[in-house]
Image 1 (cartoon, helix red, strand yellow):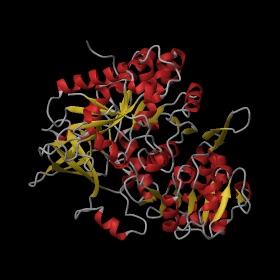
Image 2: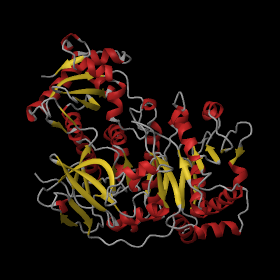
Image 3: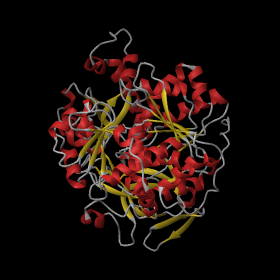
Image 4: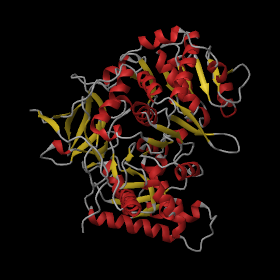
Length: 617
């Protein structure tokens, strides 16, 4: 039986130039032409402020009892950016003394970001977790020492009080938008500054090579790296995307977005998408985490997005609400052009449920796309812009970006070269040197497979992190990326996420982070507030896990794919220990490090006597 059709969108003609090399490497490049980018992101802001000055650019919930939307137009955004830009120039800020952000997404942070980009003062967005959740502030101190900011911004003084008191910010001026600690500057005072001709001269001097941002990698397996983001990286990347997604020019995009601006997905991909295309961004204070998701649901009940950008965990938490409320479902899909996931692969069962919801709401499937990239690639290096029927496909190289695929077992290591690639790492020549090969390709450390082994132009499939793959003692490679997705799907709904184990061991195991809500539903008759440990020890939960993994093992009997033992973990992944990022996805290597003792129990000879360890085969 054929599936319903997809929604119609204007997309570029898919294809790629293919160079086969004698050493087995393949180089792919796009056949799509790319228009010249503007010299800076500020050109976009000036353009939309002139063309559509009253159109809403940014919106966020007010903190008062009404909780209504506060809206900021393009004209207001430009005026505020110019005033703040004057304030940055008055303070003689620049590359040696940039602007640092401690808090999460907000209109205030957006305006300071736009101001810095407008007058050539780099901005340094830092994960709020480094100030709010960290116990020792080690990563915050490291970033402070590396970047030496002249101005540090926090939305509210209260939540950041401990960090502001315990961390030495040196001579940096502390600026807040809300309640101000002693000695801090109020953002409103900076907004009252009258811009002078110095702002215009500074704006005119900003060019493609001007440093716009220093974005830090998560540092979950080591020290965070400061990735230099030039103006060219940000502007060219949006033009690359628009060249293969021409539908973006057909109507103003609308997104409801929580993705943190301290990461390239939210801060570059999503924010700049709205700015380049004159769209509207509703800043979502929710997060795909227990107890923090309701604000996202409330916002999406009011605002119908044209683009749904999220990580898989975000879609996973949203789906039950859409399935339970047909009015909400129909509203959510009413204006939707694209469902876009990144940051991690979308498990197949979630793909299917989203398709079913779209068909029920509209009688057609909404296209689901993804891409591949890193903080170093601005972030997109590939993009899906053709019909796909499964998750994991990351598409073809964007116009102007070359991909080098180097054979690695039965997959390929992927490397990238192009104008959207970082010039290097902040104050780290050694890191910069090792990040590029002799031909100037950025070494990302990721693996891909060809969708069609005989025709690379058919597209690429993400195959995980090379550093996560390992060999069993038999010498057999285990490809973690695919195996993780397959086991999550097989044991649905018990597994929310999992970590694959087995490096230098005799068999493959799993550390399972359970879907506690689903597990509780399996335990009919168990008290609704029963402890997590009791839920996970319930025979019905364990039987469901074993049955699902048995099905997986039957279909995948090889030693590299067969799951022999598993552990259902009662404690969630911890962001402060690097196990989970503030984008909501697991870091496999960090979990294995933090929970090394649990891995040892999984492989102990007497594991059968351990109540935590579940035998699968």
